[in-house]
Structures are given as structure tokens and as C-alpha cells.
Image 1 (spheres, rainbow, N blue to C red):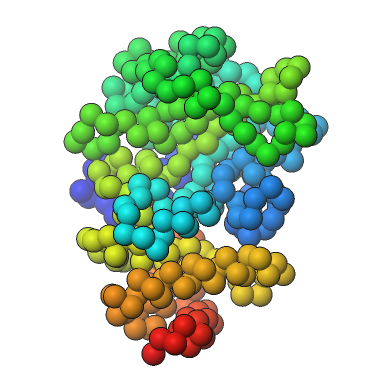
Image 2: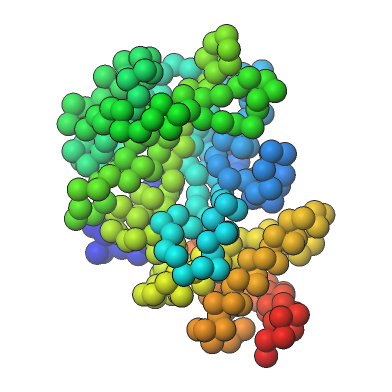
Length: 334
């Protein structure tokens, strides 16, 4: 798929649809996505990774015949601390996590993962443009990756052992993870960006499951050669992100849009409503420099959400407009 011939939205549709097709065809069970504000995982405020809605299957190890797959909206609140600064950030507030939870059959899931990436039916990425970053101390993971194409670069001990250890907020159950990362060559460079993690979830006694997750926006970032996930996202089809101010504005706009879509202003949690207001204040902070009207911002929100969810949001324009207007009044912005 030629990056020059398609929009960011079309490419993201492509990778997400191919992910679903691949793992459905291989016998995995589809798991519906949940709202980022669902609180289905009490260890986080917003759903921040694809594993959060899948953790529930660990207790009884109900993975189906092989495993379950999901394409889940995710928000990383830790990115917020940089949102009001002019410091460039590679990773924005939002992405879609395309992932699975599966039985701990390492070779099967490794094969399925790399089929998605390299098979011509799916993403058809040349093996020479992929790499594996792994610790030699994880003998089982090293062995499992021996089945994949030899053209895929192996980078061993590129990071400390701790880098390949994973926390799940399940310390009371002694559940933790060991992983390897998969990197993709960024367009027209020799730089490999991590876009996937392959994690063995285990306790002190045995392996419990495999958690594999892929960031849709890092795939897009490598495809288009952009400098950030924000500039690689669907919002970039509606806003020319040509400076740091627009990038920060767009990042805040995406966060505000996702939360508005989920009716955050009526959420039962005051804590989450306060976090939404933080994003909204940052959006208005950057917009004081860009001077978009409320109508302009609402149109951007509606266009973005329509592309992100393939659904019409025109009927919610007045609702979104009222939220923006009220926040501006609170901030003393005309």
C-alpha cells in the first residue's frame, strides 16, 4: 500500500481491518472494545492498553480455542504533563491498541503475529524492515522466534533486562510479564520504532497467557515517516500539523473528542470529569494562539470522530458547541 496514494484514515482502516481478518481467520475470538472511561480495569483511570479489557479472562484462563483479539481505544494520561509545553513528543495521548490474549503456546502466537505483519494477505511488510528486540536471558522467547523469517533483524541486549519486564497492576496475584519488542523501519531511514510488544504473562509457578499488543499509530508513523503519532493519526487528514502549536492543539483535540464521544460531562466519576476539563483547558490554551472559532473546533471534532468511528456525529454538534462555549467562559476567553 503506497503511502502517497492514501490518507492516514484509509491506512489506519487498512491495518485495523487486516488485524481483525487475520486473527479471526486463525480462530481467535473477537472481544468488543470498551469505552476508555469504562473503569473496567480499576488500576487505571482511562483504558491505556488493549490488555485491560482482557485481564478478566486470566482468572479462569478462558481464552477460547487459541485466544481472543481486540481493537481497543486507549488513552495514555502520562502524556498529559507535556501537553501544555512546546517540547515535541513522539507519542500522543491516544491510539488504538490491536491486541490479543492467548494460551501460552509461544510458537503458535509468534507465527500468527508475524503472519499478520508479513503475509501478503495482510500487511505484507518486507521482513528486512522488521526487527526483534529481545533479551538473551529469555531462552523460551528466543527459541520461539527462531521460526520466523531469517531476514528479520535480531537485536539482542539492546536494553537492560528490566526493559523487557512488564507490570500489570496485579502484584497481589504475583502476575508479571517478560517480553520482546517488534520494531518497524521508519520510512526512508534506518531507524526502527517499537510498535508491538509480545509478553508472556506468568506467576511464580507457570506461564498463564500471552499478551500481544500493536499500536496502530506507530505503524502509521513508520509508513508515512512522520515525527509523532499525532501527525500519523486520523486528525492529520483534517488539520495540517505543520508546527508544534498545531501538534499540541491536535493532541488535545483528539483527547477531548474521544471523551466527548463517550459523554464524559455526564460521567459518574467527578475525577474523570476533572481530567476531561484539564484536556479542555489545554485545548483552549493552544487555540488562543491559533484563533479557531468554536464552530471551527466543533467541525474538526465531528470530522475526526466520523473518520475514527465510521459513524455520523452531526447530531451532536450543538452538544459539543455548548461544552466548548462553557469552558471558554470559565477561562474568561471570548
